[in-house]
Image (cartoon, rainbow, N blue to C red; front, side, top):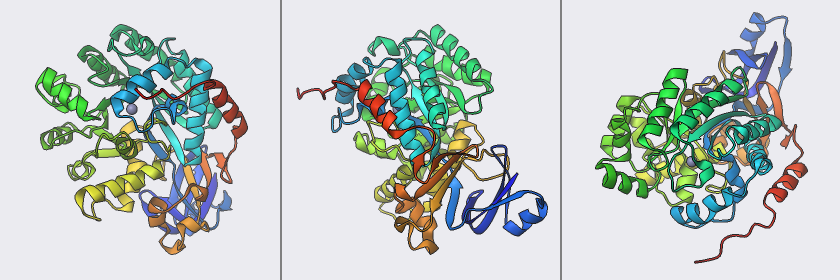
Length: 441
Ligand SMILES: [Zn+2]
């Protein structure tokens, strides 16, 4: 066991000065003032980390790792044109090595930005689970925790490699889930794509798997106005109410986006206990709109944060999303009190752990020792006396000196410890050789 002290510690949801915690076997054993811990653990090793702030590793509850390879190809296009001219055709070009290269780049950027758990909502399923396992390998190489939200997609208009029948999707999910069982670094959770990408049968199959295996399930909901209009036209109700009519809304539902929701939808979401992944940067980048974050929180809905894909944001940092969430909530409400720094930090850490059902996102007993160590001497967090606000609103990536996952450093002194950056660049160059952005129509 190791008793660590530091200048600032975000201990179980509060900032404390000159505070401590005890690490054991990749987990947090205890948290408290250093002298109390010293009495409780007299024989154990001591480490003083000095003039740093230690906070929980951030949780990126929604991303699509391979999309980082598409960065720059379709920026500034409206969503449906981006999907049809960039996402669909370019995702057809990726073989297993390219998928792994994309995941490696995406996870490397995330680790450097202080993300210790990432959800990869993954849907290139032409080879059963082979491509999913390439993503898991890449996460292992970088050293971050990954949740493969294994997509279930049966809309016939999508590329063939995305599509499975409900039976195939259920069988393949079970196989991936058992392959990763007992792996503390990689997890599988079902993810029926959306009401436009998955049939009602597929969505219900995903929710049933979650129920049976005691897992959350992920689904894109009401990201753009097109889905709202489509739902009203086909089903006569909003996307949220349509999902409720399928009987799938519960605490297991991790609903991604929820930009186009009305007050009745919000009331229903609160009643069912669903969780929401807010992706403010991507929603703004794609012109989808601003999700009603303040209203969700006022109704007691658990909201966490996601970066979304690396080509629709295009920064892979939950600290960025905390700042975006706060700024957009303030702007939308014309009220600087609409979201404060402490709430934004909670969205990017503890709430992510709650939504994913994993013991991450808090420096608290029985939680993983997934930590971000911020240099309190870095100019972007000055004056250090008010650093907790700066960490959300002002901090630049250079202030993130160390990142630990399960107590093991994956970033030291601002650099990856396990993967060589030159090798990542070379693999990405190989994967994207000869690619050109599509011409104007
Ligand atoms: Zn997405």
